[in-house]
Length: 570
Image (cartoon, rainbow, N blue to C red; front, side):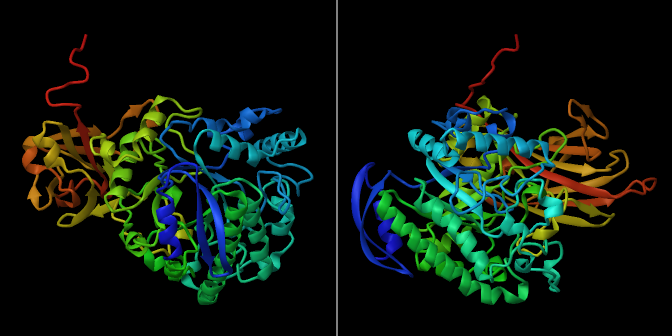
């Protein structure tokens, strides 16, 4: 029986069962192991850097262990079953009492960052009081019944002591070894990617990173590790990615052997998750032999991310099917690490209906789980309020997501992050500038079976919103089609957004929103839908671009037919 198939079977056994199995890796002999298994496998995860939405930045010292664990304790019974903690940062320092890496601030003599200095004081005070910050988080996670996955960067930033030395995030190793930096790369794809990133082709770089992950697996009672293979990729020049591929696979195989030994020693399942681009063409482009990682059982899960960065707007339409197809029958699981940043006038982060829509689109493709992959997450600040908990409660339950209110938002690039520009899958549609006679097809996917819920009387409303920049409704003429059918004026409500002063300030882009109420005969399909926008005539007095700025599909449900949540207005 293949290793991953066996582990998949083991994962279904009852909590607390001691299971003897044979574990193999590319670098270890067969060994009998006894493993304590919790029922099931991780499904809903939350990334957390432990600093922003936590006490390291927000609480003055001294901290108690309970203070430090607050960002774990808030997850208890929340619907999140897996806590992915950023134990190490991009400059090579870590946030725990490591024996192999420098603590945040160890290489700093005089501080030049006010907030980061507080984090260093808090970490040192906890350690001086006899508390390892990472052990605190592990213990509290397990007490709450949550899997604890420790994450760190696989590539680190090089730094100059004159610039980064006062920030605390950079280690001596990162600042004192410029010879390990990738350096200038003449490949056009390298435009915008920092040349100071360390190259994984250097044995010393691989060994330094290996020691960190080895410690996270073996010295601490984590439930595994997550390898950040996204940031600063590729870990070499583009001309060297073929050489990197075999080196990376060997390094990962060695790490798999460490995980297996730690699993045997601790009696605790040790998972290895790899955070990678979702698009399969990107894997070979950056030197990741993901098919071998999966077939050889080197990874337990693929944390897939969009080809757009966290600063480029949320992406609900990521194609996970290639990763799902690759992993089926292997025991390797597929997750979507969703970035929720909007950067809009009103909401900075994705609203609850947006997150539910992204999760629903994830599960309908056969993925095993969903998570919020930001460095920290909240809808209304921190600590969390009711809305965060109500949102998280649904994310592991496709049956509950089916009738959750949703907002499907076509990806709109509001700003560019050049370091991701080379990745395939960046099919930018919006915003789209049109001149008279031009049109644009705008695809989007939805997971909802709207006809089914309409027949049951559960569908409250479905609206298609097309938002225009610089539209003058008295002169400009547009046609809008949904799946080939022209949407009539009779179902249209025009929303004046020429200038609106909201509590958050002016709401751009200036223009109009066209809201169409879609009745039973015009409901979007489950799966792929296409909105076509054609500009027929344009106000001749305007010398500014006309643009389709946003397209949204907003779906609301009832608890039951004819049941209204608020039946009275007074």
